[in-house]
Image (cartoon, rainbow, N blue to C red; front, side):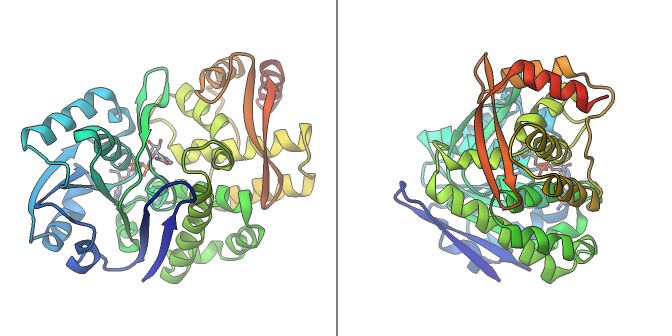
Length: 360
Ligand SMILES: NC(=O)c1ccc[n+]([C@@H]2O[C@H](COP(=O)([O-])OP(=O)(O)OC[C@H]3O[C@@H](n4cnc5c(N)ncnc54)[C@H](O)[C@@H]3O)[C@@H](O)[C@H]2O)c1
């Protein structure tokens, strides 16, 4: 088993991210559980696969479970309210622990409940998708969607432990597995050119789910995110690097309609657009721009905007993104593979022109 200690420059606590096989056992959870009860949040797809194993590991505690319906469309205030109702009805106390067993949707919903209930409760993240293992379970961002935009309502609330069992990837649909790779490619572009090359060289092993390649990939990717989050927990500076591909990606996801494109697929397209934009308007070389698009392609991820979307709609969605002002768009742009910069002054007309050309 590998582990990463996440300690913050500005926050008074640390937590562990455990990565390995067969981690659903008592010892792994014991130190992080304080009260008498645990409240497991999962969904109707993941629970039949892993809930019993997890319950067995927690058999010394009173266990409550709540299953969300499956899907990004349920990452809403309405579903979240029902989740809170369930937690309140069993009188969950502040020193009890919430456990999120599932992908990013379950993790974000349960995490936001933990941030708010009783003015903050402890949460253990048990991520079961590749995307949640390398991204959403680490760093403490929690949220629900609003019809006008993704993740508009949420809070920063760090977990007390992250337990990543790579065996859960064995049941994950291949399309979901690939979608998780986009966040890993993103991490490499942000700060680790050697990891970018490693991904390129090991693509076949990764696609075959070679266990050692999976552990290396997840650990390296989590470490990159952990290092950034440790320095900037509340996104006042460099944490914004992690939004590479997301300003375009969120707009694509919102305009396509929740559930049509996977989050990771929209991010993959967003990464390619950021690379192309940077090549045309900023400092990325043609070679690096092409390398980025090629790596995204190598993992079978989409690289271009779907034809059913249009540039005006996308520009408007980018304008509404919570990180942008009404006049200009903030973009994270690769300067080279392994280094990014933040451009806060890209005008709406520049974006619109670029998107129109990209869709020609
Ligand atoms: N909080 C953050 O920092 C952060 C970062 C990135 C993404 N996110 C959010 O995460 C969400 C996307 O997460 P996701 O990609 O994990 O999607 P998801 O949670 O919807 O899971 C994808 C699908 O896989 C199923 N599933 C999960 N684990 C499985 C397993 N082991 N075997 C079989 N099926 C399994 C789920 O039921 C679902 O149908 C988005 O809402 C996004 O906004 C949050």
